[in-house]
Length: 444
Ligand code: ADP
Ligand code: MG
Picture 1: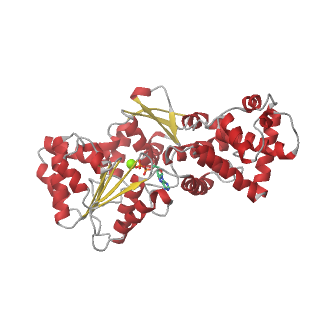
Picture 2: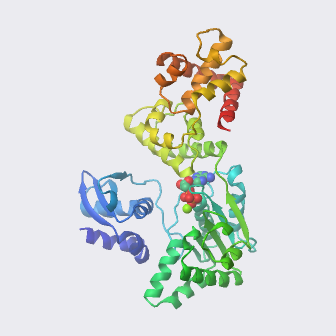
Picture 3: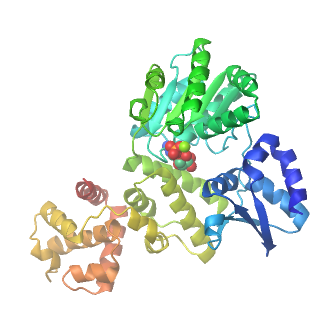
């Protein structure tokens, strides 16, 4: 039956995408509405679950009987079953008008891209290129660390150009796919066709170009393709994980050509940008999980604590929503810490409780000893509660552990302190500002 499913999938996704993405898959079983699919690599399973879940589900559901979910297993980790929930909101489709093109993710649009200080330049440049007109920045070279939105912007550009100029041939693909196609053309002796195809596009977009570093014949071909297109005044957009000059094993002449247009980088996210992204993703998740409540402070907590990259941030939020809907409970700070313990640990900025106590004491001009001492007067007790609150927010210590460091207080005392500050915070604007300031000081 997988054979029949494969035939149908090939019709849906086209021969090229089929051979790249679907052909290597095997159906290993269907039970209780979940179809398990074996993939040779993690990369492949990520890609397929992101881009083809909907198609595979549809076909399997028709052929195999009721199938609601897909579970991808990589050969290396066959035991670990990671259920990939079907994406129902969108159906990503290849938008570029070419078999060679990689499919575009329909969520990666300009509308869905949150702009902040760290990415405003890259965003503005991407917009400008997407709006067309005389080719100004050629090539546009976008670079930045993993998960900062390079691929998102590339897809957004491709989609926008395609919408504005339906007749334009926009070719978006990863450098890896470029190489794969090139090697295939060499093997099948169709290099002339390959050259022809690339040299007749109106816009060429190559993602993660650092991949071709050290791959000599692919670099050579890329260089010629690049030059031909630039000479014809065609737009080129490239992304990489670092600046052109810093890509090792990339030929000098390629480096210098890559630098002759506009080179812009996506900086690591800051707190405001992360919060903005979380808010927008939360709105999207609310449609998917109607009725779910989020306690105040949870998004702020995540924006403070998960700083590695946007993909991790998104994954955390996704997990949180899935967990909360499963439990049928509101998303609280406690639940967040429990459910995301592993991610939070990995992102731990290693602020110690002692540092928090010291900074807070300094700020409110009280003695450090009063942080752990018994005094109950407000001028001492309130800063102490703020320190408890910050300890809970900024470290992954449990309430009993925090209690121990506040002079052996009981965990319920800590909980009470944290709650108190949470309440005050939403009512008292200047207290909220104070806390934000302290947090910044501690993070610096
Ligand atoms: P990169 O290609 O730089 O590694 P991606 O473009 O794949 O990163 O981004 C990783 C994830 O983070 C994607 O789901 C993307 O939509 C999301 N993302 C990154 N930056 C932003 C942003 N500024 N606004 C909204 N989503 C973003
Ligand atoms: Mg990318």
